[in-house]
Image (cartoon, rainbow, N blue to C red):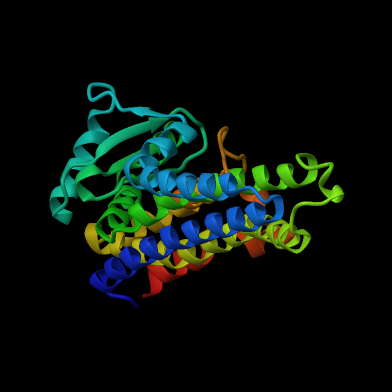
Amino acid sequence: MSTLYSQQSNNVRKTWFLVTLFLVVIVGVGWTFSAAYNSPAILYFAVIFSLLMNFASYWWSDKVALAMTGAKPANHDEHTELYHLVENLSITAGLPMPKIYIINDPAPNAFATGRNKQHAVVAVTTGLLAVLNKTELEGVIAHELAHVKNMDILLSTVVVVLVGFLAIASNFFLRSALWGRRGNDRGGGNRLALIVGLVLAILAPISATLIQLAISRKREFLADASGALLTRYPEGLASALRKISQYSQPMARANNATAHLFIANPFGRQAMSGMAKLFMTHPPVEERIHALLND
């Protein structure tokens, strides 16, 4: 199993790789469409767009993720027990106290976000608070704090913005190719470059999905193990995962861009059948429980 320090270093490297890949893909698509339409302005737009999105993904991706999930700051007086639980576990883990957010949703789930340990956020649903007892909730919070300590949160949160905007950019280029140049056959433009651009625009969202899958599954096992070490009671997290997996309905604001952030699949149990298993952002709950109770 990876050590915490090696995992932190790997996540920093993966974040830089992801940011660089996004820059290359957007500029590459922009260059091919620029060549196809004989318009340097398209390339300039692609370069500026990719640089702005990389900047935004670092500074504001956590706010984007919170807005997409409908999370709101927790009221201390209303959620005193949750606040003290997070505070105690943060002290034990040697972490600054993260901000606490609540998602008004009956589906039990949680996630952590933020660009670093000093700007971390832990968000839980009202459904999670309703169905878990204290030891189970401690297991879930410890799991999320493990993501913070392992520096998973920056990588995972950056993915939200870059994957989302990669899909938007891809859709923009596809629409411009299909509808923006109906008179392109009259000349001016590189047909080969246009074909290459179309292929890149189609493959970009697929590659983004594969990136999500690659970074999500392994980190969940490590966060489970790290969280269990923090509480020294793996049965609590195992029981919580079992309860969470029994809820079959999707979250009201489940979204492909943010699905990998959550401790469990936000689309519910029906998303686990058939071909969907190939594109799961989380390892099967049974495997996670087995690893917790037998390792």
